[in-house]
Length: 95
Image (cartoon, rainbow, N blue to C red):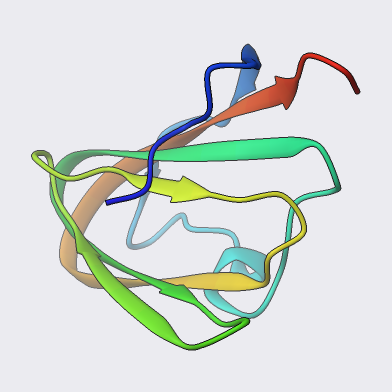
């Protein structure tokens, strides 16, 4: 499992999302800007996290398994039934 690098600093987080409140933009291809990392935290249920490039990778996230979003890497999420989650954002120290 990927992890956040040591040189990042927390700066923000989203509200909590459920299957009914996930913004449509998260359900289709999107990316963070260069230098911005994300950490998908699952509070309840499961979420399918797809990293779309350079190769397709699908990861099932749960309360025991978070997801790491790398800068400028296209990805999307898909709820797997009931889910409650949020995303924390981090910036690289030199950006």
